[in-house]
Length: 109
Image: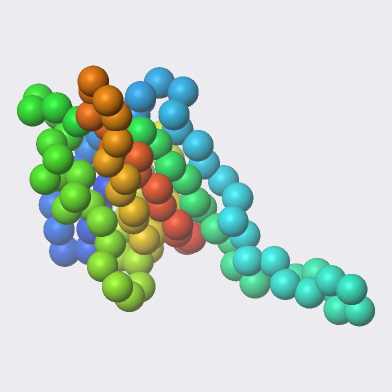
């Protein structure tokens, strides 16, 4: 199981999620209701996973470099999860073992 994050114009970063931590789906842009019919304005491909930080795999600096800046998303995600033009957020945590929770919000195409 692996996921690859490829920023526009940057180098791809491959990660191996902690087993059972990968979550994908949801976050569609649904509008309307009540008097107006429901309309899906956008199809989202959001998700998240947790990764162990270590010197042999994903390092702390690699994880921090994945974070998106202000503006439009520009990271394509492939592998066990797919998303395009995604915004990436990284949360560092853990006690004895340091982990990174990587969350993304992107589109289907």
